[in-house]
Image 1 (tube, rainbow, N blue to C red):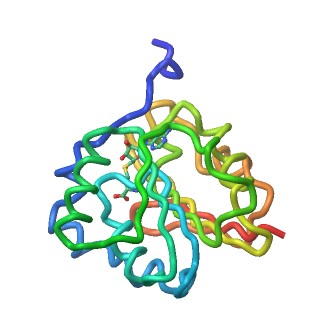
Image 2 (cartoon, rainbow, N blue to C red; image 1 turned 90 degrees about the vertical axis):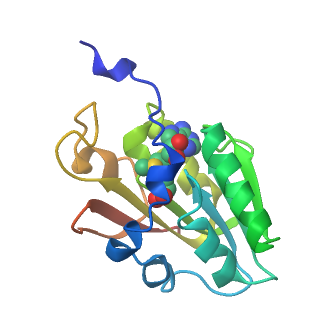
Length: 182
Ligand SMILES: C[S@@+](CC[C@H](N)C(=O)[O-])C[C@H]1O[C@@H](n2cnc3c(N)ncnc32)[C@H](O)[C@@H]1O
């Protein structure tokens, strides 16, 4: 079996939105060290918005959130939530690449458990660094553990794709890097 032929994996939006997730992940605690009012931020592989909505509140009315996912159902679920909550500072994009985002335009980028779901991980690692402003930061995570990456790519291999690593580590469910573009 040639596992590299798997296409992007789409986790059903209802799983990513399950209330039980809040017991294990606190988006505000994760994002607060990076995100300030008025920033332009990008939620890469946003899913149905578990992190997008906290990002929208953290950047405030004068900030902007770009939310990108390659799964139509996830984007639709996110748009429904935005409408229900009256959130106006999020722009959604259905895309599996970031080529439409201008270079050096993003203050903070979150790519939470996405590179381990896509065959485009090498291209996207370059794109993540391209879109950051000088001084801009990114938090990139991949999921750890059995069966999390069907291609068996290690965290070392993923993170060797980045030039601007500020720090890195592992948590209960993820391996992560913080990028800081010089
Ligand atoms: C494990 S989910 C994480 C979703 C979200 N970041 C969260 O933490 O709730 C991975 C997401 O990445 C999306 N995805 C996979 N490949 C992608 C690509 N090439 N471009 C954009 N999104 C992608 C999937 O559709 C899915 O919504």
